Length: 435
Image (cartoon, rainbow, N blue to C red; front, side, top):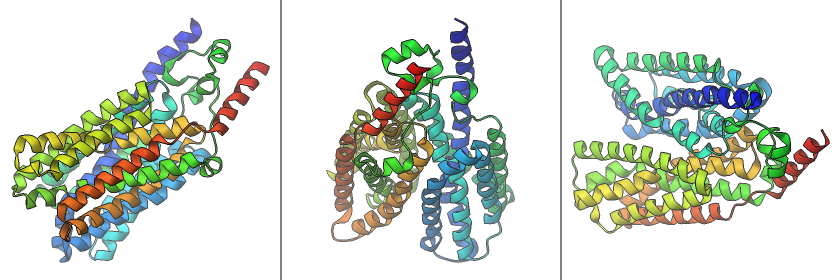
């Protein structure tokens, strides 16, 4: 009973608090950088006297920098601790917003967004996703979903700051404000966010640990000892590359179409106010999708969840392919189906990594897999735009997106829990028995 009170009681004070802190960090590192870019892009274009396409290269630099840097986040955390990683993020990510307010040439924009991308990586996807995977087993999907819902308030806060501070004191002041808020939040989070419950004398999901009972259930690896394959061991498995390629295709098909949705809707005759309203609706649908995906992941597993959200995504894109965008009701039904799928894949893929390879070196393995997402995004956006402008038109872009989703689902369904992880679990059980 004392053990149960210690682990259960403290966990639900600490465990969900960890998720709440990670949620706020996600608002900063995912929402601020991504959603402020669209608004600041207009100001940068005017200030530098260059084309929007030229400034658009900054976003590509940002996403690629995040992807490459994510490969090293797990190593930094394992060697120096989570706090150091968040400090690096505070300096680089927050500092980049300050530098952005002082750019005077186009190359500076690229350099600043590379710095911002590196900073985002050290406090972003790998970190906040790992918090959910480390602190939860039974409710890992829901915990991950809650964190990723931070993108919605992130978009609202960043656009509000840029619009209001920019109107009152100029866009440069808005960028500085974003930098100050980012640095303060990341430094504060570094003193409260903890990497694993075991480091605090707790167990995932807030459960008590009865070694004998857990041995009978074969769950010692989930509770008493943090185990998992190394990155090197994961790299030589088929499942790693199946997840890797599937996640790249996910980014290519999903983000490639989303970033071109405005151009498509304008080509269908919608006014910009109508386009803005529809994109806001997609964000709302995305929140619903992420929460539902988290619940499905916990109940049926990440593969079934990924299949379900992509079925909806294909239905939504298929409705656009059939020319239903001209009907407002059908457009919003299609938008809801596509929006539910939007950014929900990360919940499935991050949970698949934990289940397939374990959590001992989760940050290193997830960072390696997440790297492909940025490249998928960077390739998908211009490629689908080029297809739409060519002879195949928007229908061609829609078909390519659907094919990408289907192939990604097939690859995800082919993954399985690695035998090496099973062997590590068995060894952990034998060690516990011997003790």
